[in-house]
Amino acid sequence: MDSENKRYTVVVSDEAKQMLVSHVQFLAQVSEHAAMRLIEDFQVRAKSLEQFPERNPWLVDRLIPSGKYRKLLLEKRYLLVYQIKESTVYVDAVVDTRQDYGWLL
Image (tube, rainbow, N blue to C red; front, side, top):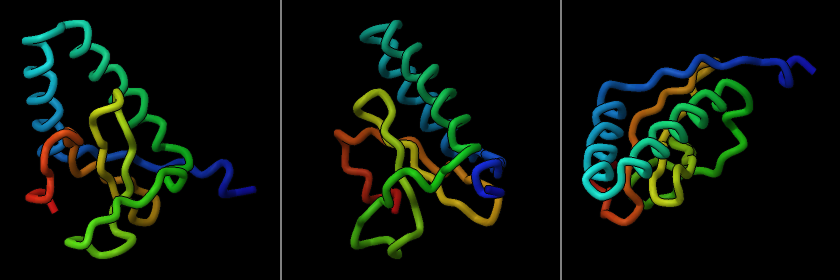
C-alpha cells in the first residue's frame, strides 16, 4: 500500500535537456507541430515517472550493466533513458532510436 503512494523525485540531467533541445530544433525544421508534440510528450512522460517508474522495460545492451537503465518511448522515435536510485529518478538521456546511440553507453 505504501508503494502505491510512493512519489519519486525526477531529475533531468543537463545533458538530457540539451539532447531534447537538439531533437526539437531538428524536428522544427521539418514540422513545428511535431517539435511541440515532442516537448509536450517529454513533459508528460517525465512527470509520469514520479509514480511507478519501474513499469518501463530495461534498456538492454551488451555494453551496459544489466539492470542499470530503463527506457520510455517518446513520440514513437525517441527514448527517454533513466535510472532509479532510491526515491529519485535520474533522466540521463533522450535519444533518437533511428540513430546509433551506442556511443552514449
